[in-house]
Image (cartoon, rainbow, N blue to C red; front, side, top):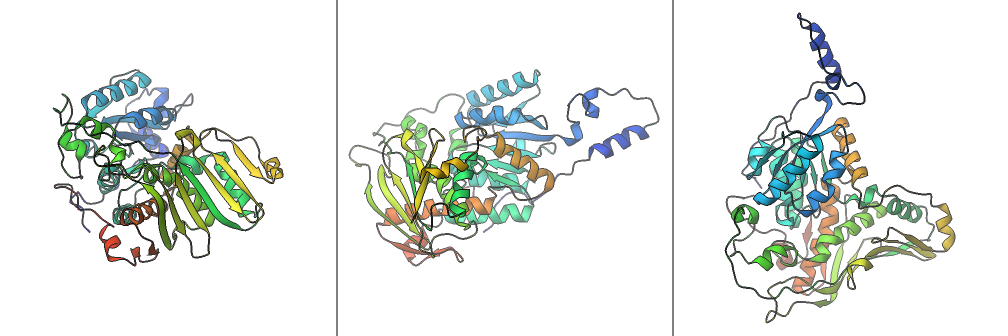
Length: 437
């Protein structure tokens, strides 16, 4: 596949030592502020990592304070297809730095063309995650991208390969790898505290159908064509746009959007980060009634996968938002992390005596951002690098394909192909021009 965007580039940054050497070599006397020399806890400009933000909606604004809390990060630009969101994001960044320096861009490609920007936060809707990340990679920008990283399996393979070819550092926003409760549960399973692991249960919540609604005028300040990006063009329908997660072409539904947090943990715990299950099947899937609803993703269901070693993974789409969890079940006990409260429970209860007081929960992305910054400096893979994230997301997308076809599918994690011609045709969707791969 070829992406119709610029070739890979890498930005170079002089070191603090080089900066000081150059400053001392200047013949005329210089008076430099302490911030330029790294005094009083400041980070010298040459050592700062300059960020831009792409897609400045609710999620971006929620984690923006986590990014701004790092002294070595300088947020310099924001981009969004909506003028109101660009305005709010710029105001938030400017207020933090007490200046008016943050630039805003309706077209993210203009922001990516800036040579002073080293990295980007991508928090668009799901339809844009892979494409925007590949644009950023081709411009040599390191990346923090919210989950799910893709909407198709083939798209994930191309994303991982593009980041590797371009030499960029990528962190997927599956931040539970940086959370103490999830790390503890993984450690207990890998130390066989519950015996031999045989099942991983994961639960997300029941989805609501979106009733039919007539098209309306595009609100002032929206670039709707840019908002749609690579997905099929449709008239502007407010309920469809505001509930994009409930539609196949823009979100794929709750189990695919949220499930990757837990399949990522399952893969990590099983040591299967570069592999995956070999079989998928679904049952009890409830679809919206097309006479009542325009949404087309599952309202509820049971989504299963099986690994070559016999371990079974199950995503239950049921219950309320607050009921989500992951539970590892072995032949001598179990351990569970409640996602709403971050509380760990286990049987036998003696396992919990091994747990130490942890740090912030998953809602604070600071630890995950810190891992990204370390990797940017060291040029080493992050905890949730694109290959890892692609393999976890593949599970959710393969479950979705199994549900839509209504049959069991066998999967080869080496060739990344099904044993079913119809399923293989669903590995990829042709994007709308000009966003072509």
